[in-house]
Amino acid sequence: MSKEPEEFPTVEGRYQMTKTWSINLPEQYQRRFADGNMALSRPGIIHWVAVWNFAEDQTAESTLSWVKRDKPREVAQEFEPNRSGYRCWGYLQLEKADQTARWAFYSYTIGKTGYVQMATYLDDEKDLDKALRIWNSLSERAA
Image 1: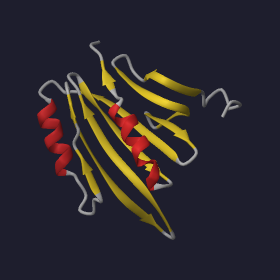
Image 2: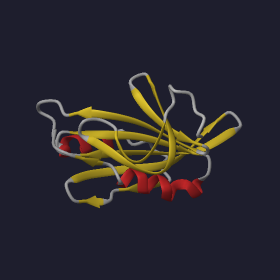
Image 3: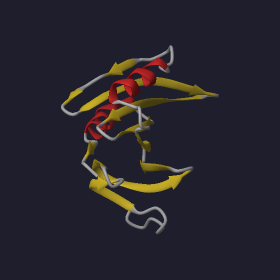
Image 4: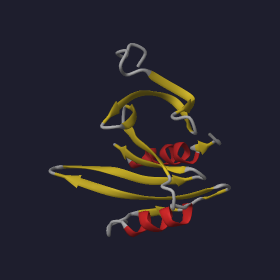
């Protein structure tokens, strides 16, 4: 990954995604943007990240409630870690298209001013632990 094009820089370690949200990347990832979202990718895994600010009347509880309502029927596993200062929820499912299948982990980390929505696609389910560690590394600081 050391010779990536300039438009796809390599990021690693504590990476400040926005003014308020950061993530810890234990390995090198290439960063790019598409349709207003950020992609962090390396062989076998890609994280699509969207950061949202709360609307005036939105709360962490109301956000968690509506994201859970949209949960698909076929979920392999749900996750709801107890993190101080955050409401977190995610689910894993096997997505099939044509002759291929891949694991998809969809997650939400809700803080005081907004939330991070992340879709992580895994070529191999064994990378789920890595995806969970990265998800749980998300942190928000006051603007």
